[in-house]
Structure formats: C-alpha cells, structure tokens
Amino acid sequence: MKYVRLTLRHPAEMRNPMRTFIMEHEQMERAELLNWNLSHEDRDYVLFRIVGDEEAYEDAVSGQPLILDYELTPLSDGSFYAYIEHAKRDVDDEFRTAFEGTSILVVPPITYTSDGAMRMELVGKAADMNDVMEGLDTDIDVVVEQIGEYDTPQAQLWSRLTERQQETLEIAVAVGYYEVPRESGVEAIAEKLNCAASTASTHLRNAESRIVRELVYNT
Image (cartoon, rainbow, N blue to C red; front, side, top):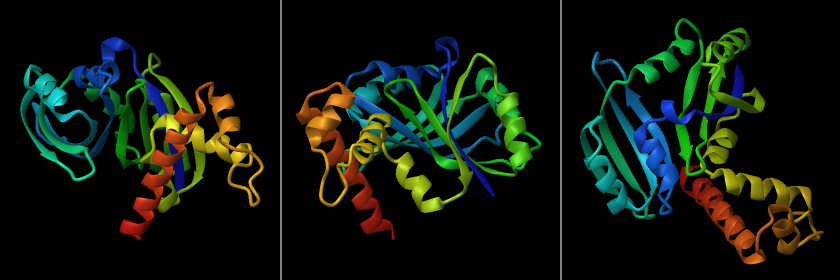
C-alpha cells in the first residue's frame, strides 16, 4: 500500500475564502479537515479542528455567503471544532475529479496552514497515485514531501505539526540536537531557521508537546 504526503499551494482565485482568512489573520494558525460528507448535490458538510482565535473565526464565517450554516465547539487545548455546511464550488468539484475512478484514499486530516499550504496524505495503488498526480490542475503547485509504505502512527503524528514545527524538528535532527550526548544546542537550530534562539526553542517545545500528547493519549 503506497503512501504519499503532498504539499499543495493553490492560486488565490482557487482558494476557499475561509482558507484565505486563515492565511491573512495573524491569530489563526491552521485548519485541520477531519471529515466530510460530499454526497449532496448543492452543499458539502465538513468538520474542521481550528487552531486559532475562535471569535475572529466566527466573525469571518458568519459573514461568508458560501457558508450556509455552522456550529463551533471549543476544546480544552484552546482549539475548536467547526462543523460547516458549505455551498458547493465548481473549483472544488474539479479538484476532486482527479481522484475519481482510482483506488486512492485521502487520509484525514487535510491541513491548511497560515502560510497558504494544503498538506494531505494519500494511500492506494502506485499506478493510481500517478494518475491522481497527473490529474491535478496544472495551476496548483504540488510538492511531494514523502513517498513510501503507509505507516499510520508516523503519518498522523507528523501531520499534526505545523510546517514550521516540522522544519524545526528536521533541522534539530540534522544538527545533532537529539544525539546523546547532544552535539548542538538551540542556537544552531535558530541559525538554520534564521530566527532568535527563543523562537526556535518555542517551535521545538510546541512540536515536542504535540507529539508527546498524541503518544500518551492515543496509544
């Protein structure tokens, strides 16, 4: 069973307005699409976990004509669920046609980050994976981040991290931060990230906290 992790970037005219809101609002970090029902002719039902300011999100979603109805539920970690009834868009239907007639499954969550990335994971037959990639609109920038056999725990843990957190952990491993004994400190990571040591430390702590919580509570 082949596994592919992709990062996609859509041109502005193809992006959902709420995705643009996630990108442009400084208090929004990401939206994780957890589940969806696309069986209706004129509307979709989707469930997101949103990491960001709930009040700002509600102000935006309540004024968006494409949103037919919604419910928000706060979570204990400061994020919240958003259950959305959304009018169908032709551009979304066109994107989904690349998957029609194939064996490919999308593994939740699909993550939309504040820097405009859409991160998704696919599993299925290798030949069909190629067909899906070739069927995507050429205006969408597609980067293949990883290809291999599907490893559920690893894939889900990694997808829970922001793009910046993933980059920070990759650099930390590369500079020997996790070696025993430690070969480099936070300062070396900060230099590679081109940021302050305190910022690099925050990225590390947030990434490590997410991974540890997932391992403790979900295994």
